[in-house]
Image 1 (tube, rainbow, N blue to C red):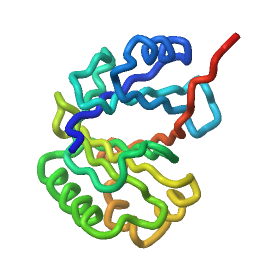
Image 2: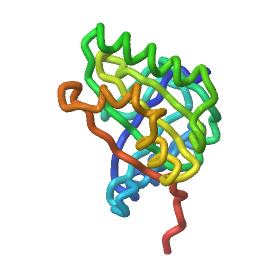
Image 3: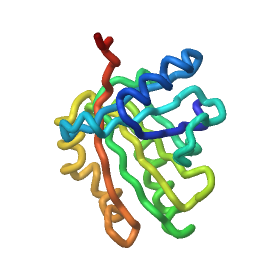
Image 4: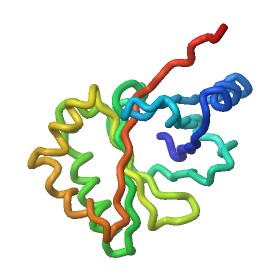
Length: 167
């Protein structure tokens, strides 16, 4: 089981160079789903100590689903007190113990390595429509109570891209 994921952001040229310098790593390049090709994110899914300096190193607390890394990515970020974190983990464990919602390929519940109250819920979907249908369905209701400013909630969405050769 994958225990750690590391994330960083950067320009296409910087991330392309990083990927070229680390062919031994499982690196996934993502672009913002807003269509802004400037918002690039790189995931290191090699389960090795992070090489990134961004401080976005996460411990995987729960994973369910595939590990093929293809699809539409949704990230939800939260900051919880210990009691709320416990309830959130129970609800995400319950979600993962059943069949994943239609179109969801993978679910990861993670905490920042140096801040156990900072959570990220990363879900990977067949496409953005499947995510949107789930987000607005009764299946999402148990998690909806955490999507508030009191929990420092914010989201981001991405899609996987391949590096193309430049002339």
